[in-house]
Length: 305
Ligand code: FEC
Image (cartoon, rainbow, N blue to C red; front, side):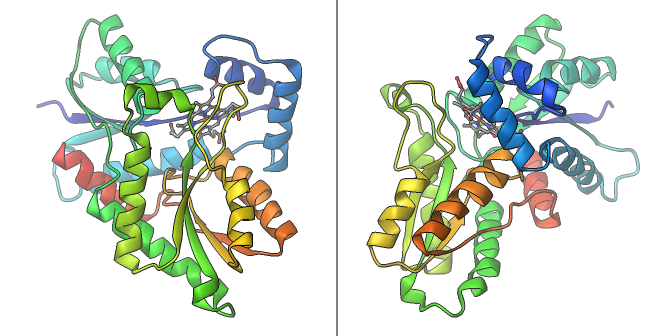
């Protein structure tokens, strides 16, 4: 019997400076962004070393997940692939390769825990289009969200426990955890998108596991598209936490699972910079990346699907 295919999906990242414009144009659905916007994005990639490790980490996860899923099996029961939304290797091309390999059943797992019609719905549309273009080769199980997977919540709680000792010199009463996810345009509320409530649910579940007294939710990485985006933005929330008398802030980017631009620039440069200006002690939790506990979590999600 042909192995079951697993298709991991991630956002995609430009590999070279000259990729930034076509990548950004792809994100914008084919509309070319202004030269200033492209230059500003290129600068952010330069600030984090010329590129981000998103593709490398996703490939490490792919490899480790395949090993985890086939552990102990004689004939491999699973073949894991990784495809991207906005850059190479594009998910549709990866699906073509999986069909050519003879794979007929696939579990599609976006590497983002919370569902939104814009984000995960976008992954779904790409998969459906490729499936139709290839002549319906696959039986598909698409995992829409996994924000309440207990192993994921335990993992995030562990990352918080590991980070809090950085604030050992500050009274616990003056320390606050702020859970963040990528902001989205406010218009998602018009179609009762579950994205905001899912972020609240998962953050609350982690806070409960830890018995946190002080925790909040904020949004990060909002785009400049000329429409309102969901707030409060983390940068404004840092001001608010300072005014509320907190001395230390631990940012927990629970909406992301890998080091990439929204972590390495938006948190490590921008948010950390704002916290320093405000005189707040600041740290963030380590991302799951290709850590063994995360790979085991993904394996549980795949086998359940
Ligand atoms: O490391 C990298 O190179 C890629 C980092 C990256 C990740 C990511 C994840 C999400 N995004 C989400 C929503 C939006 C919406 C727009 C938007 C725009 C950008 C731009 C860059 C970018 N995103 Fe992203 N996103 C990453 C990178 N994102 C670069 C373009 C410049 C900018 O606005 O900063 C607005 C589209 C538009 O302009 O019309 C909406 C969501 C996620 C989390 C889920 C996921 O990972 O798929 C939601 C990683």
